[in-house]
Image: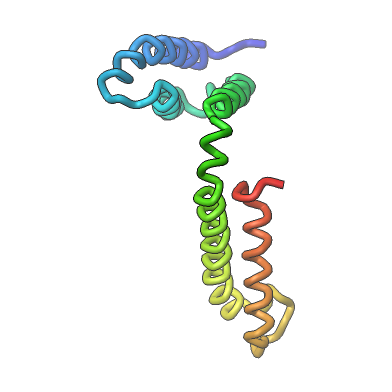
Length: 151
C-alpha cells in the first residue's frame, strides 16, 4: 500500500499538534481554570479542522477508542451520592428536555405536513387532526430515539 506524501505530512502535523496540546494543556488549565479534558477536546476539534478528511478517515479507529476513554473518564467522575441528592433536579431537567423536544418536533412537523400532504399519502384536504397526530407521533419517536431517556 502506497501512502501519498501529503497524507504522511498531515499525519506528522497531527502528531506534532497532539504533542503540543499534551504539553501545553496543564499550563492552560491552570491559567484558564478549565478542566484538562475540555482543553483536550478543544485541541482535538481544532486538529480536525487542520489535518483534513483523509487523515480523519485514517484515524477513525483511534477516534472511536478516544471517545470510549473519554466516556469512561467522565463516568468515573460521577459521585453516586451527589446524583441521589440531585435526583429531583436531574429528573426535572430530563423531563423538560423531553417535553421541549416533543413540542419542537411537533411545531416543525405541523406546517410541513400542512404544505406537503402527500407525505401522508393523502389529498390536499387532509384532516388537521390527522396531521397533528402524525406530528405528535414524530415528536414521540424523536424523544424515544434521543439519549435523554436511555433504555
